[in-house]
Length: 198
Image 1 (tube, rainbow, N blue to C red):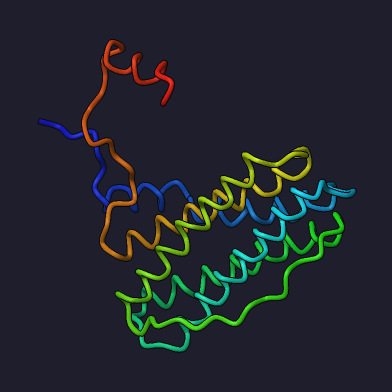
Image 2 (cartoon, rainbow, N blue to C red; image 1 turned 135 degrees about the vertical axis):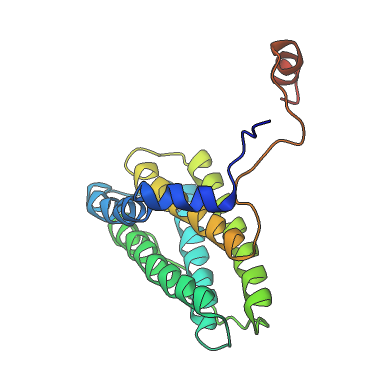
C-alpha cells in the first residue's frame, strides 16, 4: 500500500534537490528590485497596513536576535541566523515602501522573551511565524490599492511561510498540511463549496 504523503526526509531531500533555498533567496531580492516602482501616496488604510507589516518584521527581528542570547542547538542557531538575515531583507523592502509611499512607521518596541532553550525558542518562533504569515496574507487580501504593492509584499509572505515550515521541521513536526479525512468525490465536495459557509 502506497501513501500519498511524503516523509520529512523525502520532503527535505526534494527541497534540497530542487534548489529551494536558492529560489527563496532570490524572491526577496527580486522584491527589493521591484519596490522602487511602487510610488505615490497610499490610502490611509493601506498606510496602516504597511505600518502593521513593519511592526511584524520588528517582532521577528527581536525573536531571532534573542536566539543569539540563549543556549540553543547548532541547527536552531543556524536557522535563527538565516531567518534574522532574511527578516532584515524584509525590513529593508518595507522601509523602501515606507519612504516612497509616505508611510510614517510606528516606533519599534522593546521586546523581552522567556525562551531559554530549543523547545521554548521554537515554540515562540512557531507562534510568531504563524501570526506573521496570517498577517501578511490578511494585508494582501485587504489592500485598497494593491497594484505595485501586493507584488512586492507577496514574495515576503511566501518567505515567511517557509520560515514557519522550517520551524515545524526543527520541532520534529510535519510542515505539510493534510486533511482530516480524504474527500475525493464531487458529491461530497460540492455541497461544502457551494454552502453559505464555504
